[in-house]
Image (cartoon, rainbow, N blue to C red; front, side, top):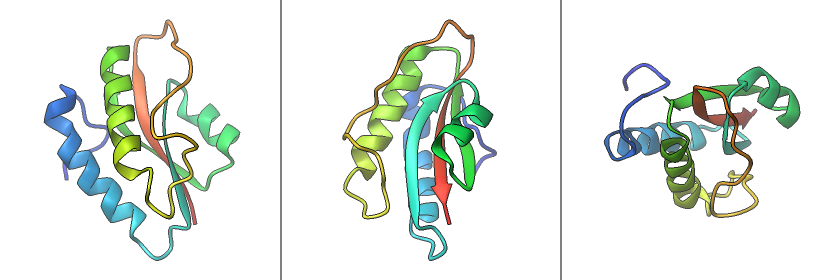
Length: 107
């Protein structure tokens, strides 16, 4: 896998991100994961109370961030370890320049 976070067009990065999340989600030591979007991953980690947070994708386009987040949540929503509440992304939009899609994990 390329170094995370990936950048580029959603259609160019989605398959690699799906493979990466499958690898993480299916590891024995992972009890739960959450796919989200934000600008400050330290703050998101505190809010979630997770053990680790991984930046998966970074972009300056909110539309691209939303597209990647939605596609990943939709793909993994049915996974038994996925803790997302809905099969799509949500949340607000910031005026910040860089948006990140992340994977929060609990061991």
